[in-house]
Amino acid sequence: MHNKTILIFDDDKHILDVCNIILTDAGYNVAVSETSHDIIERVEETKPDAILMDNWIPEIGGMKATQLLKQHPVYKNIPVIYCSANNEVHILAEKAGAEAYLSKPFNIFDLEEMVKQVLEKHT
Image (cartoon, rainbow, N blue to C red; front, side):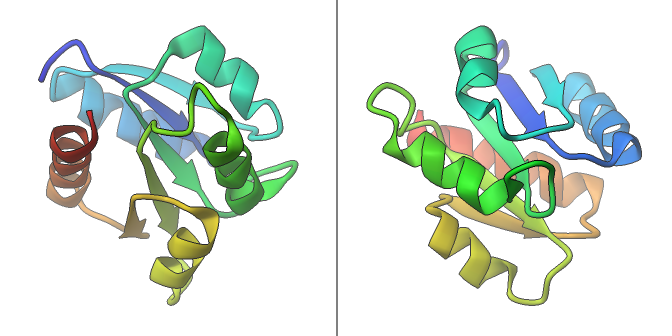
């Protein structure tokens, strides 16, 4: 379970910092990005076991970034947890092709549990 890498895409530095602390404390390696247009390059660099993707992120948005990932022959099987404050986050996640979703704001337990479930199911 440990030594898994989680790549977080979010343009809110505060959320990145909080998620980084939570997941690092839980024993994960964490990489962060404030933009999503370079998702394939970031995935190549970090080789994540799972991705936490914000919906509203520059420049192309979380949905398009997730779709790009899911179209990639090598990286399409990396599970994505889609995050949004939108009431219809489950619909957005489905459209994006994400394996799971979290509604913002989420608590520490929800974040840890979702990451754990996604890793157990998809890796």
